[in-house]
Image (tube, rainbow, N blue to C red; front, top):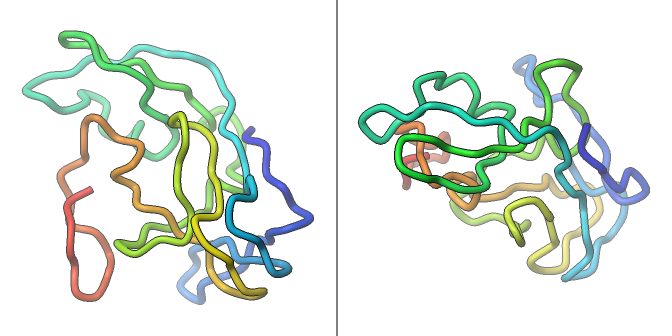
Length: 139
């Protein structure tokens, strides 16, 4: 399970059965929202893609070497929570430092959804268009 600062954020329903994360209170720029922790695992790459593509949902990519990607697996053996529910945006309010630390990139108002650019984590992208309207990138 990742560390999430639940004093600052809360999970909420998106209305389509999905879950997001939003600010529980005003958050200042530079504040740590959460940190991913987990178990280091190796995954095979073939033609520049993860063989087990479903692992993109619960693996934070740390390094690539030849045909192997090293990732911290944060979920899969347990339920998702907290920062696992941060959604993608091409114009996010959260940045990723050192591949595992999520930090407010600007002041965030109470109630504002928290978003991050998923491409900040991945050395190996899934190759799917993002969900922004209009779609602006491939994640």
